[in-house]
Length: 266
Image (cartoon, rainbow, N blue to C red; front, side, top):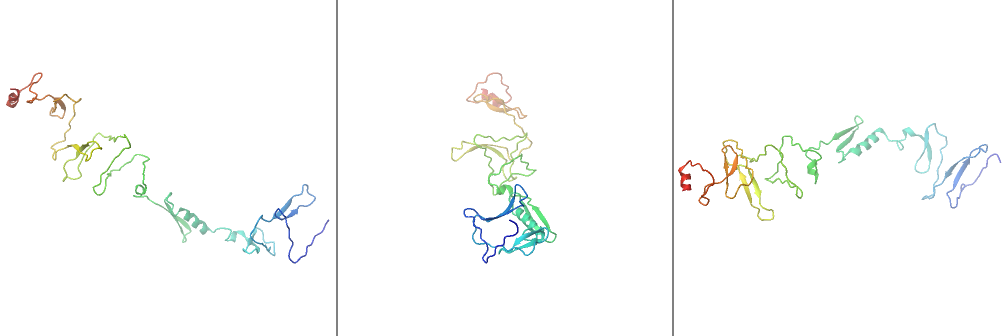
């Protein structure tokens, strides 16, 4: 059969696919084997009847079909259609919004209409990181860079290792200094067991005025019962047996240099 088939009706032609969506199939020439086709299918479901009105011409090269939202189609240039392609300013605004307020990158971006550029501002993070972190951790050695570690309002500074961990101070010169000259010399306090309340301590403290730097070298060992620490005058300490009324006997020779020592021996 050759020629055309013309269907004339007032309400249109209906194609009912029954259990499958209806379609229109266009076959290629019967000189081809096998014969291929191009088909238009309706969706499986939709909310209401749709009517698409085709444009009255075939358009120009490169144009695309555009709908007005009511089913009326027309050919338009794709490069000038603001509904299908973003302008340079819209792209820059979108990229800028992706950076603005990003707490991870700490980069803020704004689009400048005057020159069509995006300005990036990186937060210098001065004085904010530790304050905003509830459990900060170091990933490297901490360099105080000539500054001090201090507290506010006379607060204590506590170094508290976990469990049986130790506090290790590595230096050839560990100093205990007072905050000002109006305070007595710094001391080293050794507290009793933390199970006791209140906690008392024994402190080792320098005198308020020292004429010269002094280093005391402790003896090797704990000494014997009743012995006392004696200095050689140059800071070297040793355990020495002393003459006391409760300990009048001395083993070995004794040099008597004063009457007081003689009376004690007597």
